[in-house]
Length: 277
Image 1 (tube, rainbow, N blue to C red):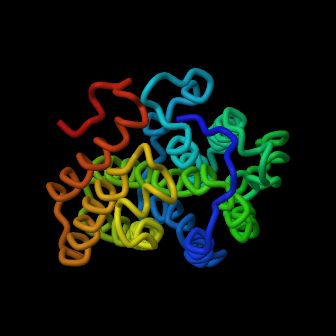
Image 2 (image 1 turned 180 degrees about the vertical axis):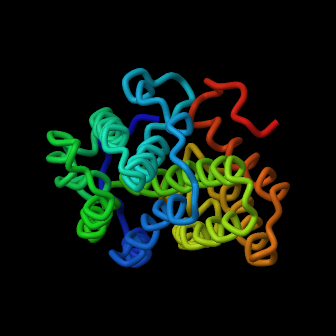
């Protein structure tokens, strides 16, 4: 769904939502969320280019593909590739993010630095200098600017969707990588790290006291969105906590099926087989 210009949030309640969301999207939390991308390499996974979102999606979006979610997915792809020193792949993902943001009207309304830090532009000009720590620090430094984006009603939607999209892409890549590794001990460590990201996303949705409050404030067209996402993420969070250190490869496959189902929505069923049959 492409966003269009709209009036800023009206009323005290909306400002409360924005303030609470900005506290969740703090510099520390953004840094912690993005540091998760490093764990795959640290725990022995190998880089799998085939797991990345196809960069062409940013140039030819079709019905059912969400610009907002893909911004987050490409963000994680950039972090994942940069973590493994795959600078050209990281640059392609960064370029895709920039292209997607240009399809929205947000850039003509507010600064989008929190979603696309200015530092990424020089990385695009010199991809060989892309560095994972510098990418993360660029996002962390611009985290306070989420508030400016969320001041626009559609901007709040973009922020929440992009963070969710990044989580889905991360879980997809993590579970697929775990299956390639077939190392239960490493897999448990990798998925334990994702608890931080799951909690952050749930925190954003749980700012709102009900699905209808979310719909009224963020996206009236998607009034079931919050309930659907919160439902499966809370179940996943509980499952990971209950089975901490005890996850089997069958558990990983089950988690992967959920992540793949959500990712399929981003790809509009472009691929019929994503590896979790």
